Length: 352
Length: 271
Image (cartoon, rainbow over all chains, first blue to last red; front, side):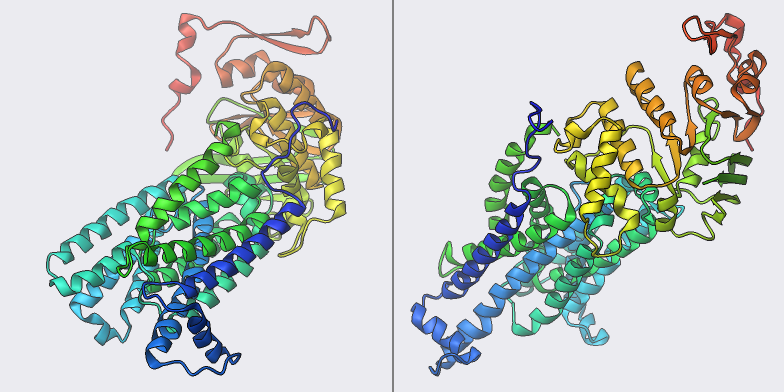
């Protein structure tokens, strides 16, 4: 019955529209990357900016001055690219954790990973442990992010089964504990170190260097490929554990796979950008609102959307109050929340 | 395909939930599980749909041991499941939910092809829900949603069907529609049922459970007797022909003061 009165297109965008949407996201992401490199706390003529980039990529003969080179090529370009990678990785991690915890509120923040990483990084920098362990401070953040997720899972499991509600509750508790620890350590830092601590708590891309790009990019791309391959199992998991078992997913094994992937994504993102919140929670939902909950359609939109969003908010944090730089968290929430609420209202047709 | 559960036992936190249960289903038969709440019906079935690993005993789908000889995907090609209605919290379209039934037939990265779509559409037609293919599943009524779940199970193309109290929360008409639909499929079916009248009219054989053990097993007329209903459920029942259909009908009397001392209360506490 094609003309059934209640028949309607199930999602805002479906069918061929999804390919068009992905194409459009690639284009706006590309434009935002260009915009992000062209513009910054220091105003430089656009020709000079792209002359510097061109000289490194081999399509321009200009020889940049050392100052120009440092601003454009050493700081701005890797920063903008890292913003895209971190935005994509956090979105994927959120999508992954929301399935894993079968809870729409799950994200790296709620599960305590960001706070755990911040605590580890701050502890390491104050105690000077990094010299001993041979890790950088990001290394300490990475390790403590993994340890936190592991701890949350150990606390949340019972008889080898990880209950979704238990997982979120354990995450929230650990998150508070780690935040308390960080606050305590703050009391014993001198004002100079405080700035470094704020980086881990609020998150920032200001310290991005080319060296930071490699690992997060590899992890993000590998996770994306893996998750797309498992998109059917991800869909089935959203129908509940029993249904997933009935449909041929080995639920406990799959949860462990998801745990490993989301931990790697989160830990690598946090290690280079600190605790940037809201992206991992919001972007996957925004993608679901637009193309529906099927992961094969939703994941590419979430990754592209997350990358685009992160590049834009990072740009906003740099140019809103030039030459000062504002914390990026103000903009992730300031832009993200209204946009998210509009989508929430638009998709509210099932009174969910 | 035959389904056999042999000497199945489940122990959780030192409590025996299912104890030495053996049931064998010939291909194409409908086997009902009845028993009071907590008698182990659902726990037993969860072992069959691979959500719970039994402590002892085995489940055979055809000739293979579900937990030793089959992986989760292989098992899901042999048996499909419809559980109690509990709403999905995501707004999948009906067709996408039904297509999930193809999951056990697919490898990583493999997409749904035309044949998968045809199987899903045919399943939706079988359950009379083809009109709702593009609807969001959360907008359906409980009865409609369970028919979609049955369509998803059919899309698995499995010869064995497990029903775990599938008609809970449904109105009486929707219950009858769903169960008669299942009966008409001719699959090897095992179903946990609450309504004894429905069990009597649908099942080829019934097993009655109490505290994780089978009390009696056999054709409906041998299992659903006044004595068994009194001993297992603690109710006074009258059995006779249904006034409209002439089939076995169970009329249960209201409890009397002495009945409140139910047989379950008199049992020794579980170990």
